[in-house]
Length: 242
Image 1 (cartoon, helix red, strand yellow):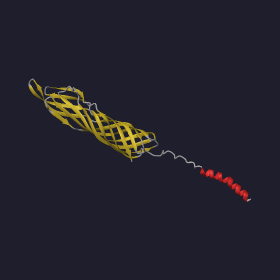
Image 2 (spheres, helix red, strand yellow):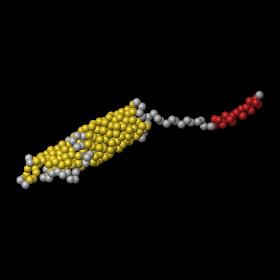
Image 3 (cartoon, rainbow, N blue to C red):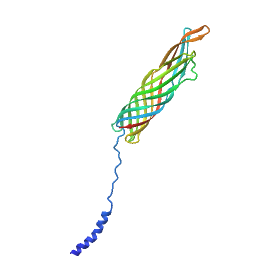
Image 4 (spheres, helix red, strand yellow):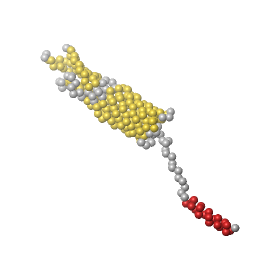
């Protein structure tokens, strides 16, 4: 009996040892598909380019009559600034948020031949806006969205008449803002995007007095101009979501 037990032990032990020597199977961890890069507060920056046709007309009026001509100042240049906001995902793949933004602008334009008794120039120095975003999340890390809100711009209009007189006004214009873009989450916290915006701003209206030289001498005149201010921008965005 003892010999039988000993023989059984000798036969079983090597098999047990071989099984124990084999590494235990390791299951791979599932990919993280639960993070949400869209819900929460965020802050970021944007840089891009802006332009404005700057269409307008100018007139010179005297006691003897008036003349008028059309022009386009076509200001354009760099735009850039900061944005901050909050958003949330809802109803599956829908997104809603509120955002404030502000920054500088270097839009500058002067028509080469305005056809007037004076030269004109228009600029935009800064842009500020508050708007809502409504988006649709196409994939876990990509969203397309539209934007609607209100914008403000620091504008400037300058007129120099042929007699050396200068008139300048710097109104703050405001109006509706519309736009849209696409945003991609590189990580749960870092997002990049590309966006188009259009500012429907009011007109610049400027009036100044001067003189017109005639064969009968200098005649007092009133110079006036109106310039539309509808700005388009294309911006690249970098955002950090908390």
